[in-house]
Length: 105
Length: 336
Image (cartoon, rainbow over all chains, first blue to last red; front, side, top):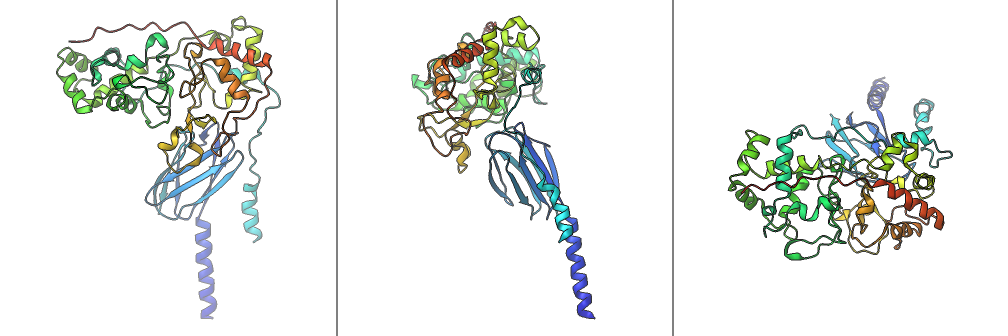
């Protein structure tokens, strides 16, 4: 019985953790991000879609994150946030593209 | 598992944008080239007559260089559409630099500065060439001391930035403030965009459609400034790594240079970041053959275009509509 309870509580914890994480979507269109800022929580994921006809070159470098991703037209990339902090996700080719991300605990 | 699938399946429905234009909506296309309102500015450097005067005075003052013979206007000459008309700039000691002088026209709307984008604000940019040993060769400490000793500058700074000291920060703000007033004049293309159908010939209008269609120029040269402020490797025969020196380790920006504006382009020859193309016709020919050097960093849009001689002539005719009457510039009397 105890084993069953433990298993069910573990499942409940896992379910609650899974339910708490969120998948965020950001588009790149006309060489801009669809929004300038994004607040996420640790465990959340971000999908970035390139809806442009040109390549984008995403990067962010902080103590917590080191992102480098080339995105051909039509491609999408998924990032997972595993540490709290803040970062600017930028395109190396199009400097006006800056997505300010805050990762909350 | 079924729940997971149900939750995530909508994400699979995200489709990439249509990559090809099937039909041209001319009104929509033209709307993308409409001139904007007044130049934007940062909150701490709003435009004013006093700031414009101070900035213009500093811009023309050769004492901002180590040799005291080079001013900002030496290379960014208003009589040459705020460029110098040379293939590559001439700096301190009359030594040739590696890149062509970019124009100051319309820089208020730029999102980064220099051919490699190493400055992200106009204020930051303004101090770069002054300090650069190969350009104006004047350390900031000397700049501050020198300008501070010129009595005639004190009232100009006091009027422009009351309560702020004469120093690198206010010098940069003033020059940037003036540069934001340097806006390209309305040209025949602007008149056509504003509704004057007779402003362009039929050949020029066909050139516009080629520019936005078969020639694919608008992928990078778009909006009223004819630039996306992006950085691309055009496949030039050139060892200059461009933006990769600013962002090392990012292969896409190797040999990449900023897309220049095309406004006043007729007057701003020679062309490309190194001034290696003498005429617009040769630039069109270069793009038509799809560049010279194939390499991984070369932008995908640089590919053989298959433009006929007539189409190239129409494209050239269209580009000729982007030059307006010269901007009158009042040369200031320098304080002594």
